[in-house]
Image (cartoon, rainbow, N blue to C red; front, side):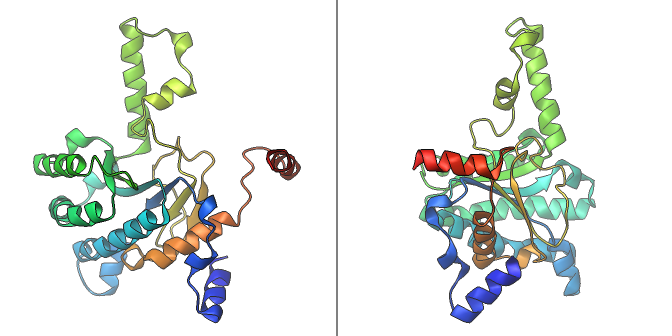
Length: 266
């Protein structure tokens, strides 16, 4: 599909944006931003060089999502497993997080973007926690795109954390075992109150989920691109969105059932 989209837009001198139906946009898009290290290594530089150059990809993607009117954009910025990386790289990433949140606050405000976060915030360095809290508070009244940073996040951590919270409520007598259902479970996840992602994009040509939003993406459409994250731009986002809109989402139903429902609703 991606080759077809590129051929269509190249021949017509149009952007993939022109092919998107704005009435059928996903409410929530999630992205596994992968390939920073390889991007840097291809240029003979250290991995942190790729992380620094990835900021432009984040900015362009956020601005494009905000302009289109997407409700939520979740970016997998730092996983719990990433703490195992070399200390020098982790320290550089944490420093980059602070400086980027500080420098990009104006961009968030100009685009009416509200910043949120999911993950084990208390495990982040103090200066990262402080800057994150400041940016969250400064953008809290914005009413456009909700930009969700997954920091020190992993789905297994999130699920275990939710189970522990529920277990404590059972122990205290606030809940009974029979009260536990999927709705209650979801209320104890980091993403409580957010719509489930309808589209998940992964860059760099890898085909795995890397412990990201495993509960939430049960019916999410997956889009994989070979583009390394620092090279990802709004045109890549448009391409993924158009690809998403070309798919039939059945949620366990048959095509005939979907058509019958559409006929009734029309």
